[in-house]
Every structure is written in structure tokens, then in C-alpha cells.
Image (cartoon, rainbow, N blue to C red; front, side):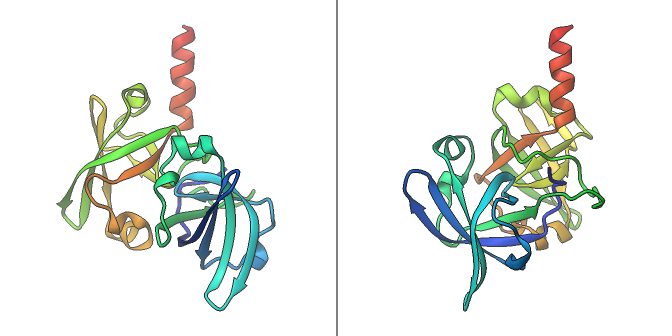
Length: 199
């Protein structure tokens, strides 16, 4: 489990394609404190640490992504140098600053537009039509691992405001219209929708 509060922006160091695809990600995390087998949300996708280390370039860890993961997330578009929002798994007693995030990506959203709004920026996203029923104004969504509040919804598009602090400590400050991002719907919305179907 995660909270959607980004704690580091890593960078893809290398990509190796064997049976699965192995990504090596540079990080500011102290990898001595990360166990092999630990979960780290990488752009909102829960992945398992399979290697780790430290060298002259800094700390790094490696994760494997299956063909299915590559198909339903943006990871297939990663290149060497791609910045990646990172969050380590929630521990009992940690502050829940965002909302409950599983790290299981539901689909890919596209940035339709980005406009200044005060000191913030208003992002409009388009989502697959099958997911639009799970997104509600004032509800939560996870986009590239970041917990965000939905402002306005219209059909299969919705808007969020991203404040300057969030832009500076995540990848959102580098985002452009047309970019694709990983989307995880709110777990509560998922279960409410399922209950409604049964009724």
C-alpha cells in the first residue's frame, strides 16, 4: 500500500529486455535500507526490488516488469533518462497524507491541456470511457503515483490543479500536453461501483 505522496524523483539508468524487462532506476533513497523483495511505486506502478546497489553515480535499484505490466502502463515508453516518481511502501504508523493507493494501475490517461491558474497549473486529462464512472468531483485519483483531487468532471475528461510545490518535487513540472500517465482510480470508488452493480 502507498499514499500517493511522492518521496523521490528517480531516473531510468538502464533497460534490459530478457524474459521480462528490467529497469535500473537511480534514486536518492539509501538503498542499504531497502530489502530485496520490497515494493516501490514507480510512476504509480507497484514493482518489486530485485537488485540494488551504490556506485560512483549514486544509489540504484532494479525492478522487473512483465509483458502485461508494459501493456497496461506507460512503462513501455520509458527510455534511459526518463524521470520517475517514486514512493516507498507505507509502513504501519506512517502518516497517511494522500489517500490509500494500491499501486495497481487501472489504465492510461492523456494530458489534454495544461493552463496556468493562479500560481498553480490546471491539468485536463482524458481517460478510457470504461473508467469514467469511477471519477467524481472532489474525489481522489492517482496519476503517475501522485495523489490528486479531482476538480471538475465532464464525460471522460476531468481536471486537477497542481500546486507549485508538487510541480517542483515530482515529474509534473516537466509535463506537457499529449503526455500519457498511469491512472489508478480510488479504491473506494471501485467498491462503491461494484456494490451499485449488484443492486
